[in-house]
Image 1 (cartoon, rainbow, N blue to C red):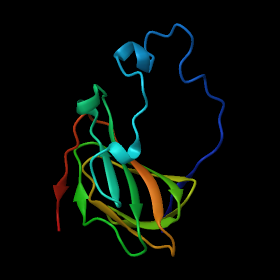
Image 2 (cartoon, rainbow, N blue to C red; image 1 turned 90 degrees about the vertical axis):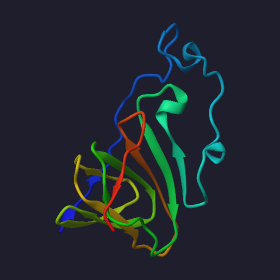
Image 3 (cartoon, helix red, strand yellow; image 1 turned 90 degrees about the horizontal axis):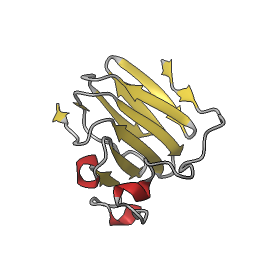
Image 4 (tube, one colour; image 1 turned 120 degrees about the vertical axis):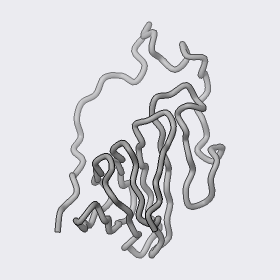
Length: 139
């Protein structure tokens, strides 16, 4: 069974260096978005990059034990960052267990899905490196 990648703390530069022309404010976004203001439900909130002049999209997911999406694929990779709980992922022909603090990467075009395999709500962010999400459901 494959294993997920474990997060390690690494030094990082400030989020908005003074005078940086790429700061959020220079793009007309002066206030942070509230996750609860994103479209979706208790299970998943959707940030579509194209609606915010961004080049990436993501979901903030909170699934109850036993919940998860049907098998699907995207024309780009999908990156899952687990923040709380654990999940069993299907990634192509592989099955892997991932826990909070780990990252799962699914290559472009790869059939995948997951189920919350823990006993608490699963919390994670799934990154779609595209301004508009595209998904082919296979079940």
